[in-house]
Length: 521
Image 1 (cartoon, one colour):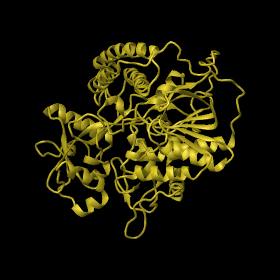
Image 2 (tube, rainbow, N blue to C red):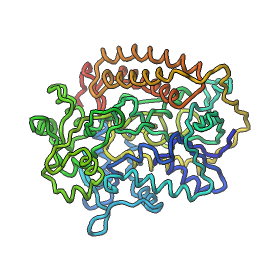
Image 3 (tube, helix red, strand yellow):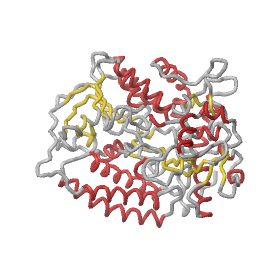
Image 4 (tube, rainbow, N blue to C red):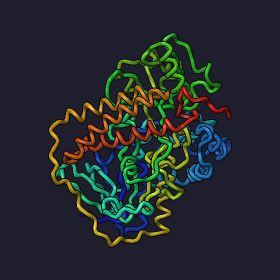
């Protein structure tokens, strides 16, 4: 058994920020970070756009950013949370830069601020078109400098340890004591006992197959919290990024940053028409839910597989300077952006709901905290404003840190049971796992996509139940492995998305059910 003061599940911006802060504050305490892949593999790494922060107080203001966030959220944001996150932004960015993160500056030496959909002003702090990669680099570098942080790479978190494992269930009092973790190299399941556990496990994009998320985004933290009886909310609000590169292939999709539209690119259909002009006065810079739903309607109307992003009228040198990664990717596919339109379509991108937390980041289970995409803070409401996610991760990691600094954990003198897999065997039929994974992804794409209806959602539940029964039977009889564990988690998360979609009776933000009568504000 491993014993640690603070356990962090996930090594993206949220988990690393918390770990660095708590390690600096308490050098005598041990911090253990568990990540199922390499330490740098997370949604953070692939974030292109940047961090939305109010810095130019002559042109911008906290109130403008707050109003933009509330508008994008469709009236479902928690105002106090929005105010907290946005006003904390400048200080959290300053810390990030002190840890070594570099951001683009203009000719005057000030931070070069970009603009994205839904924003009324230029306020996106960025590092070319690989902002997340730079943030991840800086945070990992800082964490390596702190001797009390241990990062366990290739360790897959299986289940949280609560009273359920202690055989002493009290529905009125659930507490997290740590987690069971699979060492993917030794194939052994470890028991990690922790005074405080922080879920920072990222998103759920892989459930849809067609996603901008990396393959690790399988909703593990949300599923573990759900099985442990934590409160989960707003899972129906899934943000589809309007402009993923269309390549007609399986696996994660390359993202064409929203900042490209902020830079002046146009969306066009096959006929060359700028269809967004008829939809919203902001045209291509409307919020992501509006743009994604508009593209979805366009594709259903024409039967086409994609629309286009037109950059041919933009200054090429300036484009390459701002978006070198995107330019190189297009070039590798023989797309000359000075002459050719980029084929794009919406893809699963971000989950606005998740594990419910309070203003300190604590879940409904004692000693269990959550931050980043796996959490539901109340910031995003029905739809996340572009580049508010990295900001939220920074602020809520800080909020949890502040709470833990003020109220230090108390060691639990309790003996935790070892993982019990007696009577199980190493699964031989991996084809069953892959078959059910593909069935799940097709089910979510076809039945629970951008535009939903009650008939498809009801059928989806029935199909999902069949997948669940087959996978659960396999799980009970098998020694745990990462692939099977991920699939089990994705099924749990899919159930939450579908059931909470059926419960919502009005269309808001990223949720649109054609059977609902839209409530007019």
